[in-house]
Length: 405
Image 1 (cartoon, rainbow, N blue to C red):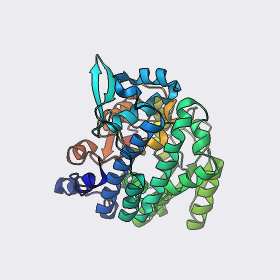
Image 2 (image 1 turned 120 degrees about the horizontal axis):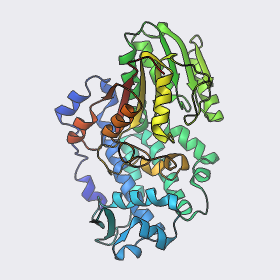
Image 3 (image 1 turned 90 degrees about the vertical axis):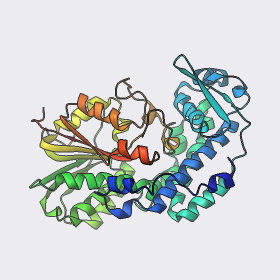
């Protein structure tokens, strides 16, 4: 896995296939540029380099001289139970290199070294990422910051939440959740385009946004509504965000951009009854969230609560990082999977077999469980994955056909 070996592939991954452009024709063409695809491929490779680096920092090389399951490794290395997900990701990521191999022992996956791990060349890959697009520095910085927290998180010396959300970390998160960061902004564009399409026929618009952070998703949604002439129909837009600092950033920015719009700011707890939390039953034409709903503790409960505040015919639209295939590791997971909010959720073998990101089919099952009679996913992730398996962005759209309960 030397740098030159990977370079020779020139990031070929099926993204030049005309079928991919056909799948994305309903979205603004500028979103899915060659630069974006190259950036995604670079982040995938950079996360493999970080996984190889963590193999040494977590003292796993000697242990993997023999076949070991994730649970066995956690026990022998005295890792915290909640680190299991992150450890499994590191091992699965390294299966894409020549150094690790896996076998299935009756439903339990075991891993061992195939070849000695290579010496990671993080500086080379960082420089290449910034050369592809200088804005990639925001994602690279956060990947580095998160990886540095893994050893302390594994042993319990310090919580990941403390490490990742300290004063330095907050700045990195704000830079990452920003529309100038292309590998993140694509989530906002896809979600907003799906929402604008589905709102175009409603005579008035009342919107509830969940977990808006510092406002990057709100910003893009309002931009697309304006471009399509829909803003005059906006009667109410409630922007919710539990973090007070992020909420103030959001409010300051959006008030300056849209002083005459009916914007409100409040908090909302995903995991408690939404009734009385600044919202009423059957009130909204759109409940909107980008990269939020996957951290709901009880996913069906939160999806059902969202449906309860939708008017008849209204839509829940969530922009999510969608896993193309079961068990497929993805680079964004490195930044989130050691956080308690990401891992401390209720799982279900049918629609939520793991914490974190889900497949398109798992989202369909979850929406169905929550009573959405009509569910759509845009773009067609299951067709795209056959063409380009590193396409991670989708909008899951559920319509409240009947009267909200």
